[in-house]
Image (cartoon, rainbow, N blue to C red; front, side, top):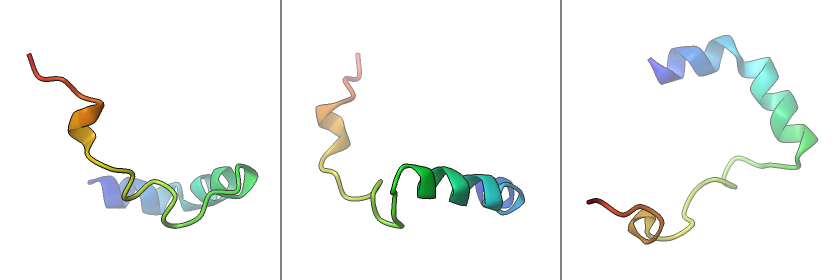
Length: 40
């Protein structure tokens, strides 16, 4: 479902990433997510 949405909006996503200088891996491998999310 997400992949389909991304394909439909590929141009807008690419424009956004180019505007902010984001590459393919800028949002990956930033550490352990549990440090930011607390389950209560």
